[in-house]
Length: 229
Image (cartoon, rainbow, N blue to C red; front, side, top):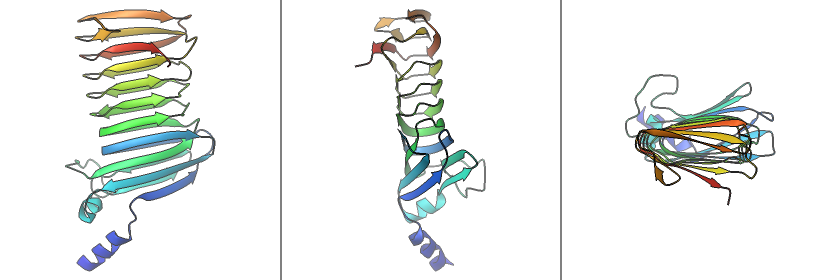
């Protein structure tokens, strides 16, 4: 039995690679604990996923990766124990790094713990939930929703859309494109807006006609709004 297990582990490639025909605007869901998620938009109709893990063969066997397609949804996730089982706790899983190329119009739903998130060139709606890890989203044209505990947030949309950001202890930087039309509402317990303290307060700023709502709330994090460099 032990020999069969070792043979199975040796047969599992690292990194693992997957490719799916998913159309122009698939739903892409990624969940990870310890590691990183990097996603880049492309003009193809394919979703490609590379999953690279760092750890012993035994650790990788205890924390496998599952990547699958169901209809127009592609899911990539780190499993804590057998992937068929649910509600398993993740205790010291190996670092797992997901790298994806997706159609530019893909819609993203990302959930991470102790993992950095970086998305470039994806225009579709994006929702990110993070505990301990920096979040960087650039090139979007549709709604954004970001929720973090500890970790900086940097947003550089290609076109402004309705945006909701909430963080406990992370600073938020928002790079607005030229001629942006947005109303920024910022509320905080002990943070600052463009370098000025707003402890237990809120502030609103309008850019252009203010057509889109950008809501940012923090406990101790700062918000800086800056033009695109």
